[in-house]
Length: 207
Image 1: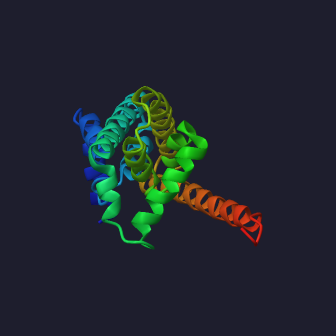
Image 2: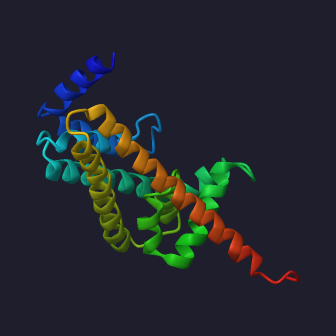
């Protein structure tokens, strides 16, 4: 079963259409959570360790897809972000994500757009909120370009590391790459949670 899956992946990754597929996956990720762009890019990175597909092109199409996706989200926020927010009831995860993004955008500005790309659910909340809050498009595009390129480089290189570590066993390379990505994501979330708790403890009790 594993050999059949690897054979299929190998055929897909050596096809010239793989770049269009990666662009499409990065474009729709966030709107369709069942299509995880990180997994697709890391997988391409694993096979790129052997030369097919080309790592540089993987980075380029993944970054372009992510950049385009974020601008679609930004424009949706401009058109009706506040109405979307009202659909989330108080105390729901969706409302919490948008409220976090709004606070962070006011405090950190464009830096949020870079950081949020590595937070599950954060990228959509941040880009929709930026649009809904009227964040300047030129500044949004600048910071989002940094976020998209850094994410594409990071995801591809994780795959390449896994592919180089297990050159004769792409499946193990893929597991290593995904393991690294999950570890980084969990560490980021734990760090953000601990910083939030520390900040709340510093607020005087009579406020």
